[in-house]
Figure (cartoon, rainbow, N blue to C red):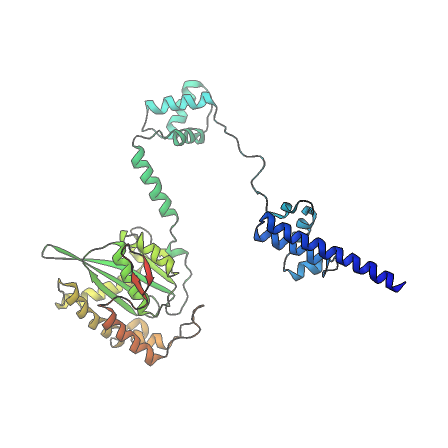
Length: 380
């Protein structure tokens, strides 16, 4: 009697295991997605180790019981495709509300008055045809038919507005009091004997560690080169970058920030008070360096002299906002602990690192990153 019960139990479990093995084979043959295969494992666990206990199965896979019941009820062992995610699009979508008559009338009015806006055309439509029409229908017809005085200019304007909407403004950032959290960047333009030179500047808004470099052109490639140098100078440990809406901070610069995992924040248009720390540093650079007769048209010579002044600025010059400490003394007393860096470099090593990087790296490509011919970043 006991043997017969054992045999039946064994046959029952064997049928279960065979069934589950067949399900796994079918999943591979059907080439179902990873999520569908995972849901199948939920069902198998529920049938075997879960003792047909939905709560235990949900806890084991760290999912909500509601989620498990949803897929359990949807599951059909004869059609394993039921475990695939289905479209979440609404079954009833909005239909076109502009009739053909309304559209033809709006098109005729727009062609007669190409520079009139939707509100004016709405009023004219009501006066001519005695029917109420929403300004949205007028705008929809204009956009779908592209009835603009200058379509090319309008398309460029749309793209510009789209780019501006995607920008994160500095007013959205909640600042944190530790070095490397926010680096402010800016560009200075110098005129000398009919020549133009550009100095890109950057400063840590908390610890006031600063860097600057002259270029003959102002482009996204030069800004990318400057960003990599600053990134190397700070030991690859800053999180956010603040700058204005200049053309040098677009295209290749944006790509570089993505590769270096640096969040970009933009100052508001014609609002220099959004970047006060770097604006102040620019003033100090003009007053204490440029106006003391240190300008040179050759970037190689100028950057060598500028590097010596930057070392004095970061390691010798006391700063009133830092309690008359130097930026390096102040930064050394505030350890920088970022998510990807468990501890900060020791002060003596850090000082040596900064000095060497300023002197040696100012004239050489970075040892950690290189600028590709098209402006991208690559491993050195």
